[in-house]
Amino acid sequence: MDRDSLKRYLVQGSAWAVAGKMSAALMGLALSTLLARLLSPDEMGVYFLAFNLATFFSVLARMGLENTLLRYVSEALGHDQSKRAKSVIWKGLVIVLVSALLVAVIVGVGGGTWVAERLFDSPLLGAIIGFVAIWLILLAFQSLFGEIFRAFQDIRSAVLFGGLVTSICTVVFVAICFVFGQHATLIKVLPWILAAGAINAMLAIFVLIRKIRTLPTSIDDNGAGYLELIIHSWPLLINALTLFVIRQSDLWILGVFRSDKEVALYGAAARLVLLTGMALAIVNAIIPPLIARSQAQKDRHKLENVLRTTATWAAIPAFGVLMVFVLSGGWVLELAFGPYYHAGGVVLIILSLGQAVNVFVGSCGYTLIMTGHRHIMMVISIISAFVALGGALLLVRTYGAVGVALGY
View 1 (cartoon, rainbow, N blue to C red):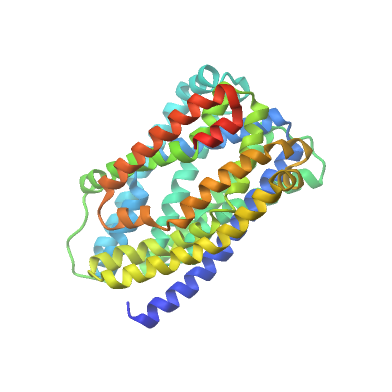
View 2 (cartoon, one colour):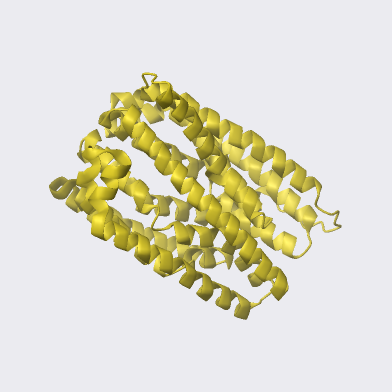
């Protein structure tokens, strides 16, 4: 990729990433706001736990394949090996389909119910575990499609089918219930959320098939085997699971030791914190394919310049959002979710400070993964997860949501 092409990709990709991430964040905030007014605090807490569980099980179902496909397809396209790219895509999709169905069956036939009733002591969560089993499949493919489109450097499709279409459809469906004043319960709302995910998956596979058909014919025969993809992915799976522990298991710990209402308080603050990390999320939406291709072409100088520049871009807006939350976090929570959630202001400040530090260091994680240092990233993630878990478990009994925020 020459200098002009790189500049054009960064500008166009950044524009789509900015629009997509801002829209996704606003849609997520709108959904949480609508649900907070439709559901009781107890049901809202269970919703956050259900989404959290579905996300965790979707990580298991993906088996780390999302980053493997991102790297392999990016490298193959960079070397004009379209046949290898097609092989990697279809075999990756097959592996994830089999894995997702297996995980969904385990969750749906008893494993999920045991977690809900024994671990979280939540009969309502147990009653909706069938929805969670379907949800995890949709989330697994949503993430996979997003990474495949990023490998093609098609940031528009990556943004749309990596979550934005799902978010828009979900908000529309839930808003209809709100506007028409229907008596909503969590069990009534979840089918609409799943329908939105299904619409996203169908549109994504349609667009992906059309994109694959446009690839030029190549004579390369260096196709990837199923075993090769799985072997490459297992450190990435461990890395993804440990990152989930760092980013998501805070709700699990809070759900085990505290009430559903406190989970709702923490969950609302955690949703707003996503605004602090939005700039880095935008950078991470466009950078990984460039890292993989630059590494394959051994162009370290260009890679270093891109990483430094994008880290600076991400830090400036993150600092602005951090200041807003530090100065008026409780008021922002009350405005978004209602008076009950004002008490989460301290939690919002603590989580925002941690997220800001993560933004300031830039795309270091993706750099390690895309340059083949996945084992180093795995070790770093495991150590970080143990520190976060240990801190949260020590503090949650005494300090509740604030203690969990400090641990993470």
